[in-house]
Image (cartoon, rainbow, N blue to C red; front, side, top):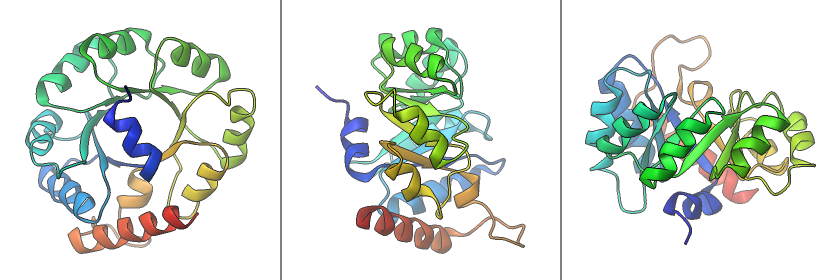
Length: 211
């Protein structure tokens, strides 16, 4: 039986990564992202009050939407986010210990890796998807996908509205967008408000659907 995460990403192919020092902005951004039609949101553990927010927002996710935890580095953090109600975990590293604990708890795991050896190692160990981090470029991902075509790759790092579709066309099952997409607009230092977040997310959802 497939995890709900995998079923959702087969359809929508997008993960939105939230990282910030202002918990109020993180909360409003998550709610606006869901309101715009996105289904998969991740709050990184190096954000302010991350566990509290994951706990609060996981209970407020609309039907069919998920709240996950990112930047998970240790098995103990898997336990913490599981208790907080996270629906999945994401790592920036190829930690088999983190993967093993996630599997023990029944949490879907998107494991970070950067080389073909790392990608193969975490995939054969049972990762649900492998986060190519940093993704570098669509050409780089296409070269990785060639010999590793069975692996469900997620491009992360450097993905934005202008190249998200290119990464998907290069062979990724999904892409994840963070500060390059949800951060301040060029020349501005302030974080976008809820209306701007909804606009950006809706535009990207439409672009991916049309691809």
